[in-house]
Length: 218
Ligand code: SAM
Image 1 (cartoon, rainbow, N blue to C red):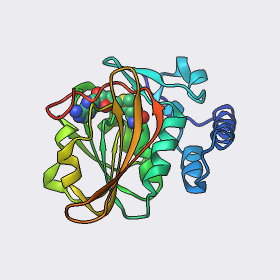
Image 2: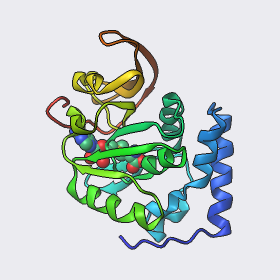
Image 3: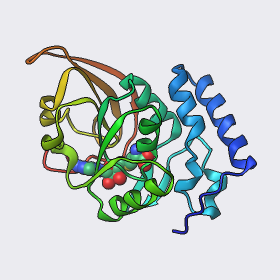
Image 4: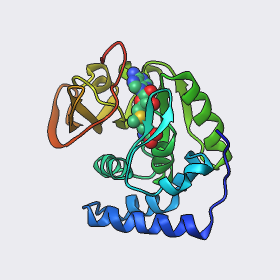
């Protein structure tokens, strides 16, 4: 894929319209909307497909994976209630777009991807855009215990259940956001760690993600 990091008026205008659409669809966190209005999503697309970059759709990124739909990215991010300086573990780097949104919000991001080509690409592309995250290659269904605990965790692929090893790596007061269900549809689940042993789980809307594949997943 040939990257071109040019942000023209046409793309800036399309990005503004996307933010307005996300607001209409119910995204209300101003900081999240600002981040969605800042990160150039077309930088993750070949120039041939720039006209697709600000549609509210998921799009293929190779290796059978997708860059998530902007609404889904904004929805998951809003649930994390990111504060500046939060440590966030992202499972499923994919294109790295969600990573950039978390970085825009001031998080310190640890991100893991199991597809080597996608891992290499994101690790190359994000610094070119001025975004600095810690990139890991491997199975994120077990988390990254050596960098734990985290303030927040986000899983960007559909899990069959809440991966229990992730819960152990969450700080008390920390939040995990993970889509859970079968391969057709998943409920967005948030888990708040309230104490050493207690967690509060809430099930929200239905989405359709690519599967979380790994030791503690599909
Ligand atoms: N937020 C990403 C973006 O905006 O591009 C979305 C990525 S895509 C929907 C989900 C990603 O999770 C895929 O790239 C897939 O390879 C990855 N994935 C699936 N199972 C994984 C696992 N066990 N560990 C790490 N990554 C995994």
